[in-house]
View 1 (cartoon, rainbow, N blue to C red):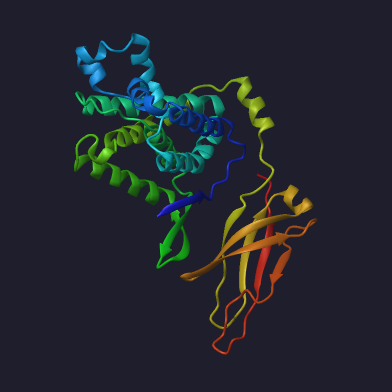
View 2 (view 1 turned 180 degrees about the vertical axis):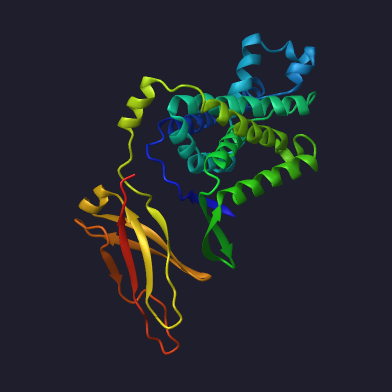
Length: 324
């Protein structure tokens, strides 16, 4: 299952989450620029448990490097796909957590989650000389926070079935609970870094996120947070939406709902709508004309169901205008 997006839209643009993604991408290229010195770069700024448990190894690093590695490891990655997978998960789940906590509390939460995941890995892999890098632990913390804050949200998930793209909305508590279970089983069934994956860092980050989000919600917000919320308020809706349609055996027509913002209703917009009925579905590109009113019904000719004789029904999408 590949997560595409969640159905809980954030009210504000995720400034800190975007900057975290940009920082990870930037430092990945810095890492690549090291060329033949990349291995030494990772040993210096990655998390190597033996640096803290074996004095003879720790002597090769300054006190500043020892402290810095506890944070810098979460901004380095082992390759393009490692980076892409982590940043995609952060993109999906991080905006909502930032929206709830506010940008400053979210930044502190993210760094503390990553730090906690690193400590979990160090203590459970105490004498390992193998460096660990990646944002997975911090992102696991974000996912743990998302589970607590938005358990009833839905995750739009891509499931390839015999090379046919199929999209399904999975409850967040199921998706994230299953993810955590797989991480725990992976940790229990292997070493602390079995197969090159720091399983216990994922587990530690996830648990830390659950605890820390409750703590962070009690931390007072600053006046800067309020000003940033005003400046980053979103005026649009997600480009990709899922339309659950009414399906009657006696009717070839399909009836669904799509949501747009007041600005999009006035200016017009384009959306990708995943239309689902029963176990079937398709993705449609919908052009929404300007100056629509609440309750307007868009008729898409020939995009309904098909009868055995080849006759096609229509798709009717009712427009809901939602000011978030």
